[in-house]
Amino acid sequence: MAPPGNAEPALSIHNLTVSYHNQPVLWDIELDIPAGVMAGIVGPNGAGKSTLIKSLLELVPSLSGEVRVHGKSYASQRKRVGYVPQRSSVDWDFPTTALDVVMMGLYGRLGWFRRPGRRERREAMEALAMVGMTDFAERQISQLSGGQQQRVFLARALVQQADVYFLDEPMAGVDATTERAIIEILRRLRDQGKTVIVVHHDLQTVSTYFDWLLLLNVRVIAAGNAQDVFKIDHLRKAYGGQIALLGDHDSLMFPASKVT
Ligand code: ADP
Image (cartoon, rainbow, N blue to C red; front, side, top):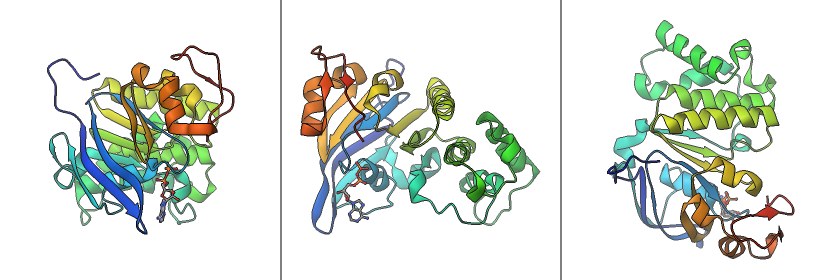
């Protein structure tokens, strides 16, 4: 959590609207995410979760809106922002090794024209060690399992030493061990005061993983401390008929099936 008195949000979004082919997929988003939280972005398929992250990173154009990262424009804060895209959106056949992918995370610091040297290689190896991938450093990324690829991407984000991290479904399709490893690393980043923002699809783990939550479905359905947001009324509003819930305590959610 942000220390008391540190009122400047890590991320501030004002009046953000994004559309694809004249169809709005994000509508008038107003949002502040405090610094130093582990924030989850949750909502049904097609709710605009990935689009939200991509528009913040200026990877898709927005119709309107203002985005501030630690009070300044994204353009001026780019180096302070790390991004782990959805695994399925990446061309894993690209011929490159795990180590090279991690070193790419250093380019922002080096500039495109300075070649990484011994120091950068050591940093990249340290990051691979943190995600348990030392033995795979020289392996082609196409020859890694899904969970291993995700670990490599996480290592790439780690070497960036960003202050705000965006991860798009980092736990999708990885085994339980990898999921635990990823969440441990993200918690460590949060405990160092960084802000970690994660698109997540498994409602069963939401309340254990996140201390701050955005429930999204084109609009902001609810946002704030996880225990205030993760309530039956909000979930029904976000998911509509797609959700089946057992139990009638509105703060204890047990989805009957995974909402994907
Ligand atoms: P989520 O991440 O919540 O599943 P997305 O942000 O991927 O949602 O998508 C939101 C909506 O925008 C969906 O209806 C999706 O089909 C549409 N969409 C996403 N990307 C594009 C694109 N590049 N072109 C056109 N429509 C898109």
